[in-house]
Image (cartoon, rainbow, N blue to C red; front, side, top):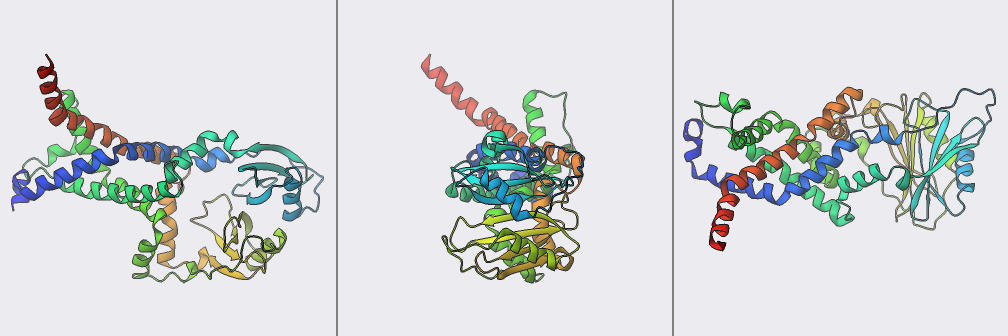
Length: 379
């Protein structure tokens, strides 16, 4: 009953407070960087989807995907096909990604005339989005930074859970902890903001922390989901392809996937051949403009032989598979159109409010006293 009536008197609550405080101090800047970049990346696909609009044409050439890719490759001698992105309702202009001199050149090819509409270097044209993506996924530190992002996600989740425990003020005053007293002094407002936002947004903050960790460390989450629901469609045979081995023509992979899913359209092709055991991923969808995590049919091939390594369809997803793939959409809020994206981006800034108000409370309660002592000694 002590926690219900007088939680502030309990020693373990004071210990949890110290854990919460120091975790916040340690990962505060991390949270600010991740949340700012994450709020931008909610609109990533919208910002990158800048196909030049073209009117319909009577000149419809018999261009295949391979022919369109060759147009892009001929314009960039020495480049390598990286991807084809058709995740849009606009189907005439085809964005083809070519890796060239350490950058990704996006070549927009008119599928009717096979002419190049425009060509941009992704890292220059969309430098801000690409910078935000690097910051969000690895803190601009490479593989080591990605691990740090995953660990930070776990710590954010732990902080959220501890914060919910600390929020409870006791049975007599719990209603007061649900709102902000805007007419109070700024110190009280900072405390109210931290406490109230932390309570009302607990589910979102905890979700962002655990899903952020999941993207870096997916195996433990998959193991937990499999204990509740099987995920056979996500099982994949290893690829025995090695860098330098032959790669089949692009149309072979897309043609095989199209025959498997004749009612679908091409959504995305990813040539994952910059590493040992590479593969070719072909994503098909009845509605390519819908986020792939919600509606997709994916076929993964061995690049040299065309052997199928994985074949998964959203029609046959189990509950576990739907949950696993839906975590991406839930994390980024891309499942409800523009309005939800705007709401998700704004809510994504809540952890920053928690960090700033947390630092403010730390200053008010601890650092200011120490600062005052130091300045008095110096006088």
